[in-house]
Amino acid sequence: MLDSVRVRLTLWYASVLALSLIAFALAIYYATGNIFRERHDESLRSTAQTVASAYVEELSETYTPSAAGQIVLAEITFPNRYVQFTDNTGKPLASSANVASTVTIPAPVLADARARGFSHATVNGLRIAIVPLSSDQNLGFAAVAEPLSVVEDGLSELRRDLFAGVLLVLLLASVGGYFLARKSLAPIASMNSQTQRISAENLSARLDVTNSRDELGQLATTINELLVRLENSFNEQQRFIADASHELRTPLAVLRGETEVALGKTRSVDEYEKSLWLIQDEAERLSRIVEDLFILARQPINTPAAFNKERLSLNDAVRDCARAAQVLAARKGVRLKLENDFPSIALNGDEELIKRMLLNLLDNAVKYTPEGGEISLALARQNGNAEIVVRDTGIGIPATDQARVFDRFFRVDKTRARALGGAGLGLSIAQWIVEVHGGEITVASAPGVGSTFRVVLPLKSAD
Image (cartoon, rainbow, N blue to C red; front, side, top):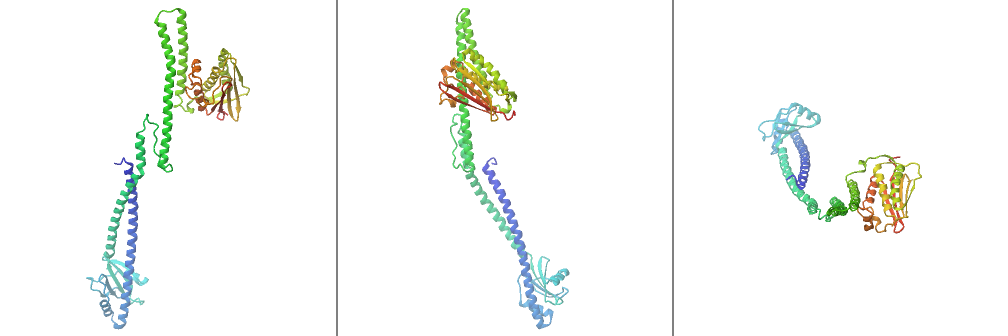
């Protein structure tokens, strides 16, 4: 039962409300009790002053204190109040008949009444107000008493009313709070049921957003954005698996087919040698694809901080890669020119990955630059960044394909790329390496003119 958020919210709401109501009821009870007692004392004192005035008037006519008291008590009666006249020492002179015995007033109370003009005391369950009979302090005192139960009965009734009221309000508020919590959490329940229907085969489904400005609407919007990212990632993963399977299928089929042909019958040494050369070429191609896939497999799980970052010289890295690519360029009849006149450019990064990125760009340029073409590699410092530019006079890239050249397994000319041994992973790996070093790679190209790849790497950490 407590597993329900709706029930827990109702219990929390009821608990807070109960504490608030109890505190409020106690405050009202004690404040009302004080008011009742103060007004009770004022009423008793007013009655005492009234009978004292009547006593003085009768005393002026009869000249007998006891007779004056009896006359006043006969003329003025109070069903629930006890009246008593005493002399200056507290000795009773006359008392009303509604109390079985006279009330003995303590001497300190009489002294207080004589000093202040009135006093109150509680004696034998009676609340008593005492006032002097006149300004003549030696004439005596008038005392009016009433049982404390008069006030206590009223407070007892107030306690019952407050108790019943608190329970009733708490019950109604709890029921209302439960339905309010149910109504407020209804969108979450709807989101939960909709989310449960979303699976790997149904990632295109989205949650309903009733009000995008409130918290629940913002939550639904965030979940929808998460679903978009999951769908894109899942589709990318499926596309990656399909493309990887397709790329691996061709060299494996060639290896298997050539092996079966070579073993089908006895052949000459030259034929076996041709088969082995073909098997070697396909094995090397398969090895390159597997190596590229291994590098790409590191992308989702490794952060830039996980790489082996150390201070390296970009000048040396560019020079080494140019020397390695020079062999490929010369073999194809393409001229490679190095422009590296800047004194020294240092970078904090992974030297192996930086070289892999440069070799991928240079290898891509050599593949798609026809014989007699030219490739240039330049390194410079621009606005606190290292800028590496690889230009070629190759076949170029159509404008519609330039946005996708960094996608995995994407090739502008699939037939020619496959003939050249490309799998469409080089530029994707290059972009990833640049990004994990905090840089940016861009391409500008025109068909029949050539392509320019520009890499910008920040140097702040190195400097």
